[in-house]
Image 1 (cartoon, rainbow, N blue to C red):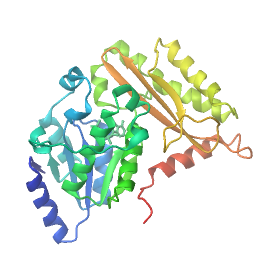
Image 2: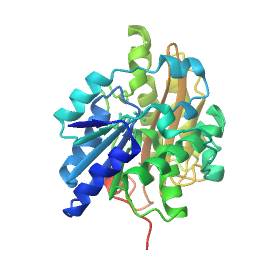
Image 3: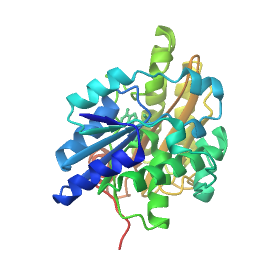
Image 4: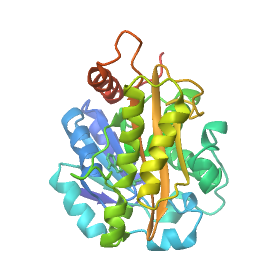
Amino acid sequence: MNIVRTVSDTRDVVADARRTGRKVGLVPTMGAFHEGHLSLMRRARAARDLVVASLFINPAQFQDPADLEAYPRDEGRDAALAAEVGVDLLFAPAPDEIYPEGFATRVSVGPLGETLEGAHRGSDHFDAVSTVVVKLLNIVGPDTVYFGQKDAQQTAVVKRLVRDLDIPVWVDICPTVRAEDGLALSSRNVRLSATERVRATALFRALRAAEQVIASGESDPAAAIVAGRRELHSSGIEPDYFELVDPQSFVPVRALSGDVLAVVAASLEGARLIDNLPIHVPSTEAKGNHNTNVAAYERALEVTWRPAA
Ligand code: AMP
């Protein structure tokens, strides 16, 4: 596996591959690899000829300097793991390679970037994510870019900008990888103490509690939200938000029908965690057949997405 630091070296490697008709997959990351990241890389490896992973801790998307400072970094370990799963090229630029002197442009996706995580972290957050994603797509020019469902709002933001800016790339959303007890894997989990790590499992239980209420035929979203919040409170967690939203717009749903996304964020001691669960609301006829519906929706989410031509 090659490690490159510059935009021009990255372009050279990709151009060489393209000359022989090879298809390119890109996995954008901020490092501190775990099975979640590796699942994206494996998926890219299986589908594409040249697999590029980027490793860039984007300072612009951190609102809290202490959070940026504390973000885990171990490039040597990351490079070894990426090589093991078959990544061909690790693009690991320094900040001034991405933001050279005079850099001024910002990409913004509007209201989608201002709600939930945007509201909590400041709307600058998704502007910064959007800007760096557009840059990475322009630097690498992949056929497919891979993102994790774990960061659901980020995936909606990426789909929005790809559609709005006519970027010719497939966006492949990969399922959330979880620990056995349900906690979604995250680079931030290493900052949790043993006690907080146990408490953190309440997030997934809360999402499942909302799902169960919906599966039982409940028609009022508030009832499902109450069930989720109750689960969090029983572990002493006051979430930043626990909502049922439309999976595309991230606007809270007023009624339960079709596909909804349960989303949660909470600050535990040491780390702020986010998680989500896609839930298919059973139609009147299908009530009682909940598992089939959920499985169908989760399969649908895995399907590669590209804006209609
Ligand atoms: P990050 O390094 O946190 O920016 O994550 C890089 C990519 O890995 C993003 O597309 C994330 O959504 C994805 N990712 C992070 N955690 C997981 C997980 N537990 N399961 C699946 N994908 C994940």
